[in-house]
Image (cartoon, rainbow, N blue to C red; front, side):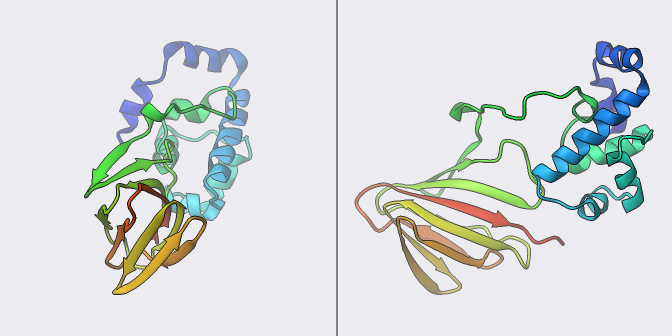
Length: 204
């Protein structure tokens, strides 16, 4: 992501506000926002620093609320979280945000309807709602080696085939399997089936 593009997208009024309240307040907000974003993703400082290609000490300093990072460092942090620089230094806002169903990404794979349940990207994780029509089937896409997938059936019955092994899931059942192998999902019933998939992607 281009650092200048990030910077150009920041509202002039926001920058004026930054100088009005003093850079110390901006540094405090930056530290608080970075820590909040990291904790929301379940990541350690070391993990985020590595993801942003920054020294651990630099990341710790940013979260302390006393740092004065360069634009290049801010750009790396924003990239790691997949947010804008403006969001990193913005004033606190409500911890909750409502996403109407229509705002969530939906894809059709095979005969299945797959709805993405993470409107804010979390590095290394995917959560999907999978709906299969009667007798419907979907072929899974293998992920990077070491990836784990957690599949639970919510409604109806789901048949998972992973590496030649077949698993039948009824409502409430969970199967944990390697997501880096060939797999498929099927609904053998006469009514729609719903499952939820949580994928924890292994780092390369």
